[in-house]
Length: 143
Image (cartoon, rainbow, N blue to C red):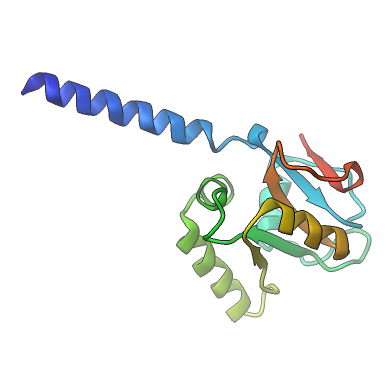
């Protein structure tokens, strides 16, 4: 009986470590179009994705693009940026939009859709998997 408890806690610990490994900034890259910036800190990146800023220094409106609940990255990025789950992210944005403090984000299912949207939409930003294709001119470094 004691060995089952130990095994349970070992498996729990390992699973939590694996989840934590999947939610690091190093696994993702930031992409943007005509934002007027080439680099952001981690804190600034989170602020943009939390709707703190509505305009870029270039004067263009910030258009946040997020992974939909259908995306395999939605849970990891919800935890990484908002410290919640996908439903928490949707509630967060509903509250901001309802209060008139931000425009709603665009939710897309895949990295390819996100890159395509960002490429066509000035002022937009998204976070995609590091291994996903993206034209170099759209990449914004996170320091």
